Length: 151
Image 1: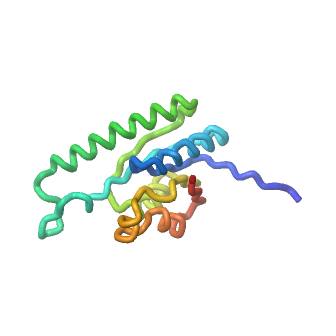
Image 2: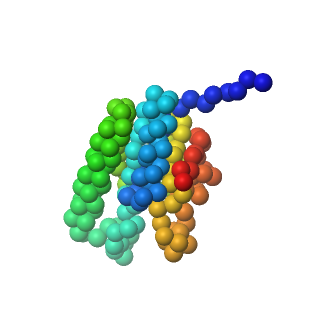
Image 3: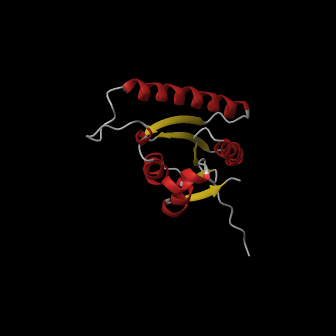
């Protein structure tokens, strides 16, 4: 019986600043190096985290959104440098606005032809998981490509 060896070319690792996400990034980097694959590091900024006015639009204080985006860009730059120090040059960081569930499971992989998603079990505490639902649970059910949960 011949063993089939799966090779990945475009790996996605979503990050949210949590320790579990950064552990997933380490695993994704190792797998990308072994496969000579491209690595996409993604942070999804959920606009629901900002105060919302009656009309459903983000309040006029766009400074909070802009500052969050700036913070995310800095965080992603730090992660890219960390990955490059591990020897992987083929890495790109992305920040997107939207629903983390939809962006990670479908939208981003469709746009970037990712064939593997590697993520941590969750970046939320138990109360947040109850209120929001675990993004990881959704991604494992809805993604079209392989998903590895790095523990």
